[in-house]
Figure 1 (cartoon, rainbow, N blue to C red):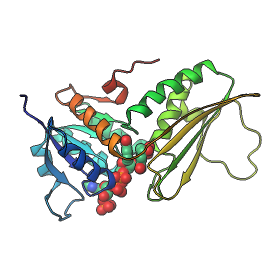
Figure 2 (figure 1 turned 120 degrees about the vertical axis):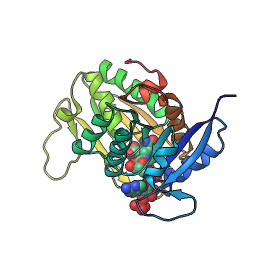
Figure 3 (figure 1 turned 90 degrees about the horizontal axis):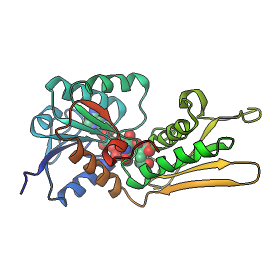
Figure 4 (figure 1 turned 120 degrees about the horizontal axis):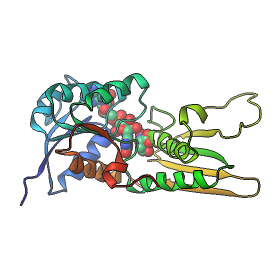
Length: 256
Ligand SMILES: NC(=O)C1=CN([C@@H]2O[C@H](COP(=O)(O)OP(=O)(O)OC[C@H]3O[C@@H](n4cnc5c(N)ncnc54)[C@H](OP(=O)(O)O)[C@@H]3O)[C@@H](O)[C@H]2O)C=CC1
Ligand SMILES: O=C(O)C1=N[C@H](C(=O)O)C[C@H](O)C1
């Protein structure tokens, strides 16, 4: 019987941190060796971040962009452990240290660890390529506590649509509309955001033509499948060479 993979959770007191602990506890392939939270935070069974890094083969991190960037730097400085990042809402300046850290350690980062959602990105890429004169609009809905918008998942779907069109999302993405905005430019990829209640995560991508609309959608029932996907990423990334990977690498989804 192989030794279980030693996992530390960063952001252990958050919604996903608590879900991760529950899902890891039920998985015999894994041993939960440390739960860390904010520096200096005290709590039952919590350890400081650097103590957690010393114990783990892989850290699974659902915190904030700033905390994830600092964590990546700390792991890179030690040359270990590998990192699975679930946080969303990164700015370019928060992504740069993660790319730098990935020269020293293996990092998986994804806006969604859901298997179904990652399958949806492939379908969106194909549809965007085939339906090249449609308008593309992405809608997302989340619980009232979510702090970033559009969601990391919505941006992943936008990236997939842009790949299908052979363009950069930065050049065609429209993240907000208000006031006298004029007619919709051709080729735009639009985002719309709803926040409220306890919605775990709902996403749809519509392809709108003159006389028909195709909508591809995904709804998360609870947070356990994000945790299972993050565990799949942790098992995959342990022992990998340094690099920045995503769930397409983990799941073996090539470009469609
Ligand atoms: N990729 C995916 O599949 C998924 C991604 N997410 C993303 O994961 C992130 C977390 O989501 P969620 O769990 O709902 O959010 P929560 O706010 O419930 O949890 C985040 C936790 O991180 C803690 N935290 C903040 N700063 C630090 C720090 N420096 N070190 C350690 N911990 C810190 C927060 O502590 P405090 O409360 O004290 O501020 C909080 O408890 C979000 O960015 C979300 O979008 C969520 C679900 C799935
Ligand atoms: O904050 C959340 O809750 C979620 N965040 C991720 C995102 O930004 O897409 C994934 C999921 O939708 C839940």
